[in-house]
Amino acid sequence: MAKRIDGVSETVSFSFEGQTLETAKGDSVAAALAVTGHRHLRNSVVSAEPRGIYCMMGTCFDCLVEVNGVPNVQACRTTVQDGMVICRQSYGESGQ
Image (cartoon, helix red, strand yellow):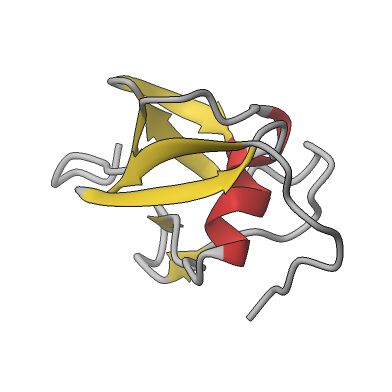
């Protein structure tokens, strides 16, 4: 599991899959989820295998999540905001 190496002076609250979590203000969604122990962010459209954080710089698109009802948000390029509602990226039965 990821571990924070610096102190946290200011925090924000957000929810992931209905669970209320807290992280440092300024963290990306991906960093916030990693530090709170959440690695499974979506399932592969092709194989349905779990996908999660990979590159942390916005080139791989493995970290897609749904934020406040908006799908296809890159978790590594999105800063957590207080009250944000984050869900695993989901696809219809056809995989899309």
